[in-house]
Length: 222
Image 1 (cartoon, helix red, strand yellow):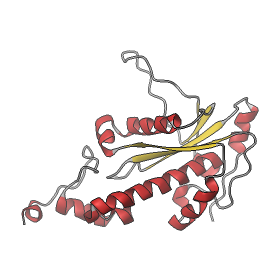
Image 2 (cartoon, rainbow, N blue to C red; image 1 turned 180 degrees about the vertical axis):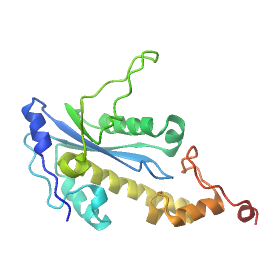
Image 3 (tube, one colour; image 1 turned 90 degrees about the vertical axis):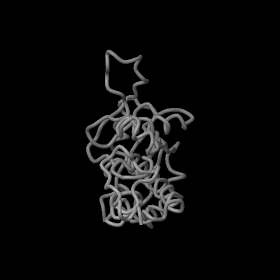
Image 4 (cartoon, one colour; image 1 turned 60 degrees about the vertical axis):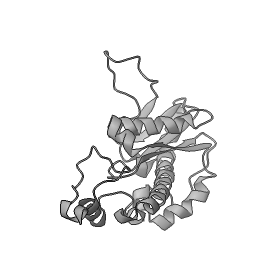
């Protein structure tokens, strides 16, 4: 069993003066098709310990993630998910699309958290400083933490709600494009998905700017 995350990081931020902390995590970054989804869970000093069994979504089975969703719906003070489409990924690039999805999640909250915790070392939520661009977008107070999705309860919770939401979206899209097997592979580069791309080529839900396998012309013309 994976080590269960705690509120230790969030509690340290409360001691520093943050009234609320938002854990944020993305899902779908490495997929070949479908949107990216960003989950956001806000906690405050009154938030109780997380539900038993919570962990980074990548370490949990689909059934376990689904089991956690009703409990996470009642944990924390606010929850949201934000999306960026495959077309937006092609137009802006994957990092800017993650930023767009994250800001859409924040826009769905009643009040925004004082501090946002992101997994890893790269702050994709705030735009890079550019002296030659138009006035900068709003900058959020972000704390980076390596393995936050495994160690921080709010980030782990965000990863689970984002993963479940995106999996459901890919199952819905699979009904429109059954040839790619998205109900099983969720848009990632499984052998089945890659073979379908070679046979049929990409559809509008694919990230066209990525290095996708080319359709076999003999198959397409048959």
